[in-house]
Image (cartoon, rainbow, N blue to C red; front, side, top):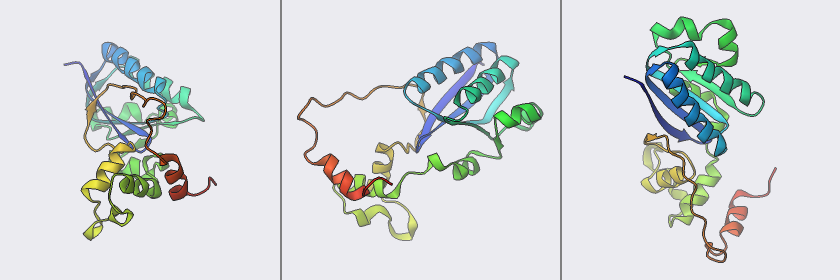
Length: 191
């Protein structure tokens, strides 16, 4: 079994679930996936290693080099390191470059880029046809429409295979009327 890479996004954080073997061949696949994501502007990465059962030095180097490239411009974190690999990933020189968290949830809770601005979600929800007050349903959960707005803004909830596509831009003059003005009004002046 080779390396399987499943990616999702929460806020600006790209979460990559790595499964199987991160050997020399898997390292090449991972590097190609990372180059594609970085080329599309990704700067915040969280690697969920719960399904990883082997990591070679080649695979570890890919993760460490990513952390070095992003130093000061982004983050590279690890979560859910299996007990069988814990000794490797918690070595001091590696742990300084690649912080390790117990699980994905705890890492995302600590990452400021994983959070969406609630004003932006509210604005997107209203643009989709629901009142802004719909952003929190009874019991503190989000409505289906609010969840859809959050997904449109990059908070994907369902995993997807690594595949980055640039959206097709609208032709000039076909943008929704007043969209930029509405967003400026809802979000207020830049701080």
